Length: 202
Ligand SMILES: Cc1cc2nc3c(=O)[nH]c(=O)nc-3n(C[C@H](O)[C@H](O)[C@H](O)COP(=O)(O)O)c2cc1C
Image (tube, rainbow, N blue to C red; front, top):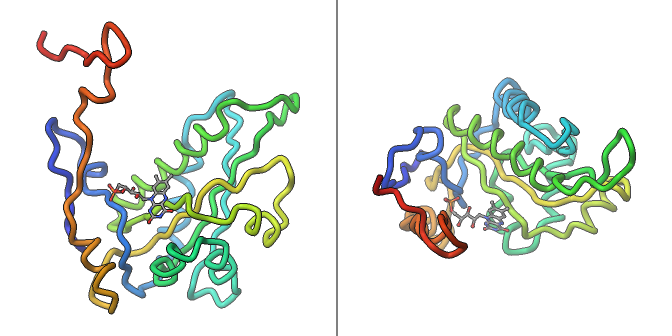
């Protein structure tokens, strides 16, 4: 597993610092126990009114049921190229309305993001890596899996063990060996006014 631990300016938990999004995966399957724990982690995410609007469709390359292949063909071509090697592919969906009153849930995408965040942290603690994708054909995915009209297919996630050893594409290997970059806190944590950096000096 390639180490791309974040070079942080302030200390953060290892489960966050060691997470990164690989393009190269080992062919090793993800165990059923690990996979179940990833979705269990998602299950315990916070959500607006505890609606739990997240939904997932999971395809495992070694399952032989064709779901992995069906998810793969719903990704944009550039993502298909590398995600084909991931042993697990997941579609992440979210229900747009509250079950209790059928009113629009303005936080449904936020809640799905939290659930996926939990899933990704749990994966990292287990030595697994996730690569999330918005590059999908959501309409094709909705048709392929008979998704109801009030549910949005938002993203996909490739899951597996990061490993460049089995990947012949030099460009993908180079991406996985590249530097990681982030904006400074001053670019997005504000104090007195929007755009004015918060003061950390007290
Ligand atoms: C919602 C979301 C959508 C993304 N979509 C894609 C994608 O379609 N294709 C891709 O190669 N990477 C995609 N990424 C991965 C990002 O490019 C990656 O997280 C970012 O460059 C930071 O790198 P790191 O995750 O290794 O820290 C996506 C990430 C997120 C969270």
